[in-house]
Amino acid sequence: MRSSVPERLEPDAGRPVVVLTGAGISKESGLDTFRDLDGIWAKVRLEDVATYEAFVKDPRRVHAFYNERRRGLLNQNVQPNAAHIALARLERDWPGEVLVVTQNIDDLHERAGTTNLIHMHGELLKAECEHCRAVHVWHEDLGRDVRCPGCGRAAGLRPHVVWFGETPLEMERIGRALDRAGLFVSIGTSGNVYPAAGFVAETRARGTPSVELNLEPSEGASLFTRAVHGLASRVVPDFVRDLLAG
Image (tube, rainbow, N blue to C red):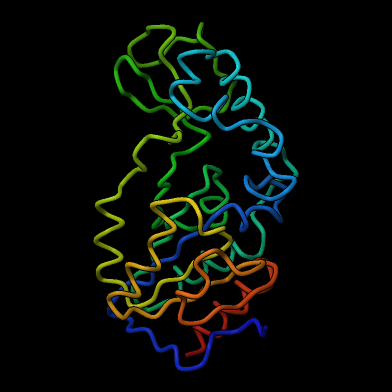
């Protein structure tokens, strides 16, 4: 399928463009996806490392899992790819508001230059204290013996990520943006993790045009106005270029 803005897509610049991104946009930067056949959940049970219950039961194992992922993200070979850079360009050059809502816990959007950004599933390079609720930028390993820089207490720091069973962050702000959106774009997501998987149905019910940019059709592909399938590093820059060209 051709990698360009679908015909007759004419978003109103007075209404925001809302972009949802998932693991597929960061895969070409060297980060593992979750639900591919060779993804993270094919190697480790999410119930063992991605729930609060798992953290209470075996905090050492959970910390080890996220410590490894944090070190991987900080690897100098992991850098924003052309898709991240294109979305930063869209935010910079589009005459209206562009909001990127990401399910990813990496910082590649920020490194590429995106500023109007919501990490609905949290951020790997931050730690949250269960004692004082403070959130700190964090690039080192975490463990139960590490003390919170804020309150000074140990055994309270956890990765600042949303685990299964927990409520994603900033849902009210996301809902307001979807209510007002003139265009909804979904990039690199499987379409089977809620509530993000339901965003296209919400916008469709309001008559908002929507576009899927994905390696292959997602589970909700039929709900989109148009779809363009291919590598994110190719289809996203083409989409942004053509959208900005009007």
